[in-house]
Amino acid sequence: MKVGAEAAVCESNYVSVFDVNDGTETELGRWCGAQGEELWLLSAGSSLLVRLHTDRVIDGDYFDANYVSTNCQFDVSEPNTQIISPPEGVVLNDQLRCLWRLQVPSNSEAHFHFREFNVQGSDHNCETNGLQLFSGTSGQLTHVDTFCGSETPSNATYKQKQLTLFLDTDEFNTDKTFQLAFSATTIRPTIYYKTRGCRRRTLDESEKMDSSHGHYNSWIRLSEPHVVKRLNGCFILIGKHQQCGSHRTSESFEPVAV
Image 1 (cartoon, rainbow, N blue to C red):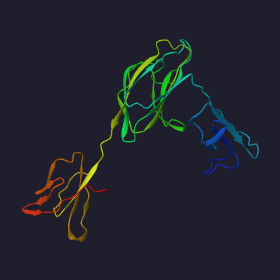
Image 2: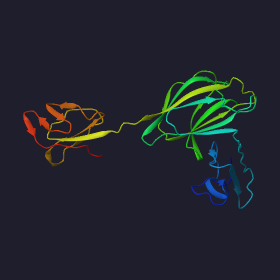
Image 3: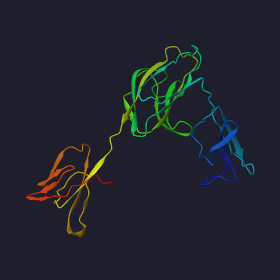
Image 4: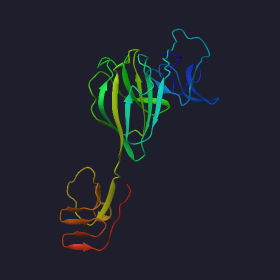
C-alpha cells in the first residue's frame, strides 16, 4: 500500500474501512502512506466497506487487499471448551475458512492445549494452510501467533481477554484436523502489605523502601495472605501485629494499593 504521504492524521489521500451492520457504518480506521500494510480487519456483521479518498492523482500510489468470507464461525465464551476442526456440517474437499471468537473473564487468562494438530502445509509457510491467532474479535486485530504443519504446538497462555482463531486451508481439507482444549485460568490478585519500624535488608525487586521522616517502610508483595515473614528480626504476622526484635507494636495493618 502507498496512498498519499504518511501522516499522523490522514486527511487528503487515504484508504478507510467501515463495518456495515444493520445499515449503520462504523469507521474502523483510515490509513495513508504505507500505514495499512499487514493490517487485519474483522467485521462484526456481514459487510465491510472500503473507500479510497484522494484530492489528486499521485503517480505510483496503489493499495491491494485480500477479502476473505468465512464459511463457518463460532462464538466461544465457556471457559472450558473443546474446539475441533473440521467442524460438523462442513463439506469435505471445500476450503475451510473458519472463525472462532474466544472470550475469557476479565480476571482470567486464556490457556491453549492442543491435543492433536495436523493442518499440513509447511512448518515455515502458513499462508496456504494455517491457523492464525489474533487479539480482538472485531475491528482492527493484532496478530498474535501462527500454527501450521503437523507438529503439535506447545501449551501457551495468553493475557488477552478476547481472541480470534482463523483457519484457512486449500480445497483439500480432508484429514486437516486439530483439537484444542481452550480454558481460562484465574489470575490471582497481588496483595501488598506495609510494615513500619523494621530495618531493611536487601530483598527482591517486589519490595520498595521509603526512608522519609527518619523511618523505614517496607512493601512486601505476597501471593498468600496467611503466612509469616521474617525480615532481619522483624516478624510480620499478616493481619495481626508486627514484632521488630524485642519491640512489639500493637497496630495492625491491612493491604494497601500502590
